[in-house]
Length: 203
Image 1 (tube, rainbow, N blue to C red):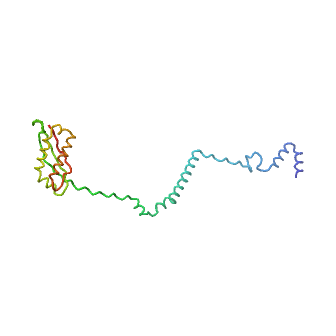
Image 2 (cartoon, rainbow, N blue to C red; image 1 turned 180 degrees about the horizontal axis):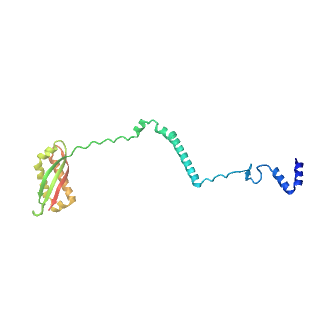
Image 3 (tube, helix red, strand yellow; image 1 turned 180 degrees about the vertical axis):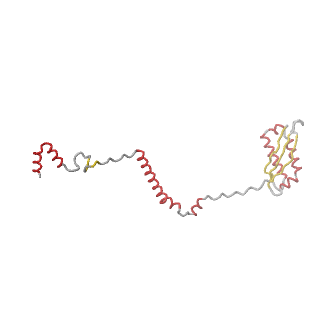
């Protein structure tokens, strides 16, 4: 076979040698542009926007699958778990006990008293309203029965005080204490706890 090819080269010259070489070259070798005499088509290029959309859709799909697994496998069993009612009851703070309201105060009011302070020669006057806070059974009735005696005590107390004593806040507190002591010396069924000036006008 090799001898026949050499003989053909000698007879055909340079052109025949090229033809023989073409015949001896295996199919598919050479430039690589043709195979079996056919030209291979080139693959189409994928646009960049389409590739980005495809990646985004893939990420969304994976996220949805992960979320579904977490909800169905982790959260759902916890939500459906039985509730420990005793634990809940133990966490609720007990309602504070309501303290009993104190009984209403017992009071007795004396009508307004108008007196001339000592040393004013009738040119100045003091108008006073007084209410007593009381304690004891039957003390309100006793104060009502002794109201004229209480008014006389108040008139004597305020008229014996000078103008400076009437307007001085510190001395006014001394007058309050003095009246309480004298009223409690009169009462039998209870006592006076406090005294309130509902009016106190000096003119």
